[in-house]
Amino acid sequence: MTMTASTIEPQQVHQAIENKEPARLIDVRTPGEYASEHVEQAESMPLDQLDPEALKADNGAPLYLFCRTGNRAAQASEKLTAAGLADVRVVEGGLEGWKQAGLPVKRGKGVISLERQVRIGAGALVLIGVLLGWFVHPGLHAIALFVGGGLMFAGITDWCGMAMVLAKLPWNRRGTKPDRGAGGDGGGATCST
Image 1: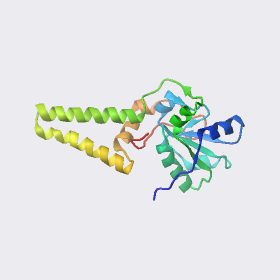
Image 2: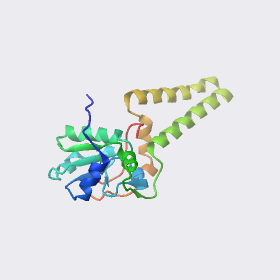
Image 3: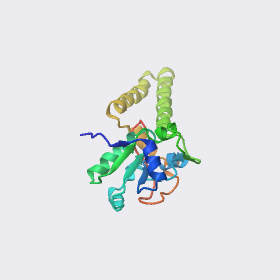
């Protein structure tokens, strides 16, 4: 059921911007991640609030999708192409690929990436589970077992419930309003952000 998303190199997107070609850059990360750093021409449209109908009104201008590394952008691409949008491309490597190509980003005050938040949260839960299992009751080792199982499930399916929960927290929902298109906050993604 998963389709392979059409991709484009960051340098090609930058060249299109420089040539003032019709294009729309969409960043599907959480508003907090967007506020931390983003491609200046990109607008924030979190994955869980991406509205294909709002993007159809752009008269066929290509849509270039960003996230941190490309996973959420690929999910957004599937959603948009399933809704009938034709020229949708994922920027290879996401924002990380853009920066590795030496292209400019706008930096601001934001939050740490959703991927790091998942690692911190999962690590803390495992540590708490192990300590509680040793010092309180051995049955509390089940906390660490549950988190480990959740991480395996996330790795196998590329779907992470912890990332979805973390994306809804206030520090990930605040940020800048998009310049155009859908408003609001939110996020939601896989653990590989």
